[in-house]
Image (tube, rainbow, N blue to C red; front, top):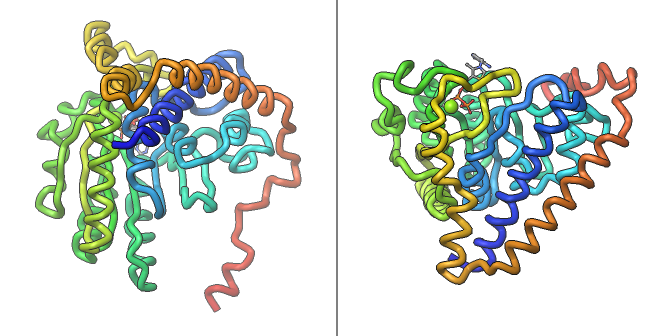
Length: 323
Ligand SMILES: Cc1ncc(C[n+]2csc(CCOP(=O)(O)OP(=O)(O)O)c2C)c(N)n1
Ligand SMILES: [Mg+2]
């Protein structure tokens, strides 16, 4: 593992954490409306996966801010999207669950549990059809593995032999439903193991996530087949801003927080000489500044004008494409 990767991990994970804590504050003030799902505690999965994956199309679920930031979207444009402003990545019309940017091959952000998994398989099929072997990354929660979309997606990915990495973030809860109450077994990689290689990893360790996704990427692109990763992780915050999260005990939360991915990275990085206290301090200050500027930018940006209402709703060139 190089110093440069460890530094990128720390920067992006810290940026994600500070960004989301600040977004939570702005939500409480009423500056952000609609849904807001925070990934605090899960940063190692999001950052490790994006950096380990590299080039290719990415489809994620609605707990997506850190994925978007790690992919390179500018914090101020992501924050503006949360505020519903025209300067946001989706022109303020998508909000927290719909961050898109084809420039980064980043295709959301999907509010419907599991719905993006067939999309990811379709994207991989489309590339394969045109002779392109680039892999696709699809991430989703434990709850999504109980959906029809999930089984249809792994079934077709294995049947068509397309290069998709299925990355399951097992944070043990689907809103308030604990994983073992909706699945016959809690080790979710077992759901995919007869379809494709499937592994379970520590999602609180960014090095492990990065290395596993990198290896999976090499596998899917060389073999042209799918791969399944279950990353064990935890969200510290309730499911969304409208959930109390009181179905979890303080003891359980403490156990999870004791494995904090950022603290974990700091400890390992310092021990291995990949991070220094000076760099950590530099990043801690820098991300505060970036996030404050992002909030200012979002606050000062205009709302989408009324004329925007019907833009980007219908595809104007579809007819040409079909005929
Ligand atoms: C098809 C569908 N059913 C139900 C919902 C309501 N819902 C939103 S999030 C969620 C839980 C999903 O949990 P999980 O897949 O574990 O992801 P996490 O929120 O833990 O990241 C549910 C049931 C939905 N959005 N879509
Ligand atoms: Mg979950």
